[in-house]
Length: 298
Image (cartoon, rainbow, N blue to C red; front, side, top):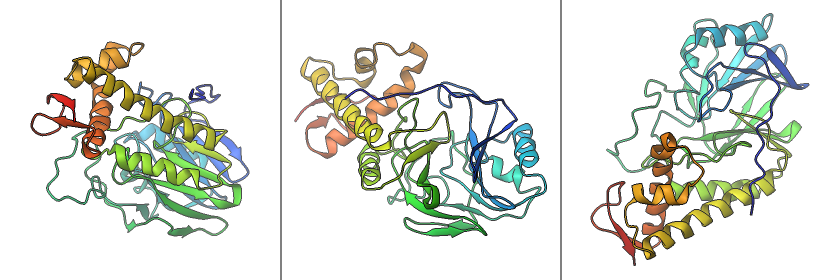
């Protein structure tokens, strides 16, 4: 099943875009292969507003968010997860407002096992004022958000639904322009696929990810994402069957159109898929399942 990717987006850095009567967006100037054009910070409501994902610790971006809400009061700050392009802006924004922060928890808080080493490239300083769970509601003056827990990309990844508009703010869980990197141990392919299945049971009309344009056909997009991950698993099994036992040797065969500088990120997602295959008993590792382990069919 082909993923219906979309990349086109009209915007101007530092300017606010009115997406709907109750949704605005300001995009940070932090483009990259992982953020596309940059981090999209959403503003919900009028007068008393919520901000979703303040973005990186970029003073110019925070100034743009403040300009977009001039004459209004920021009453809530919602964070989808704690990668450095999403949550560090909270600290700068809080210098200008007293809005409490809402998120699942600090980085790595969704991992049950204690003492697990998690990646360094994350916002380890963020700790929300309010820890929210799946199904919780966050109420403003003229808006209400529903928390939708979607671990996988990170263990603390939370989406936020705006039921009045049938919109889901999906962070990095589902994006229109790219799949997400799943990087163990905080990233988990099994939980990611479960989180995708969770979205299929919902009736959201559109997704607004933190990066890139909207997902206009959510169910079609999610089904394609699930099929894509299953295809990757089959590629791994064929690699191993053909004698390719190391992840770093699988990546060039599986990602033939990917620039070489992106191979390390691709290897992390292959590792996530490999760990999932080990969990299901389809392959075994010589030693602990990791980037440098050798794998064979069970």
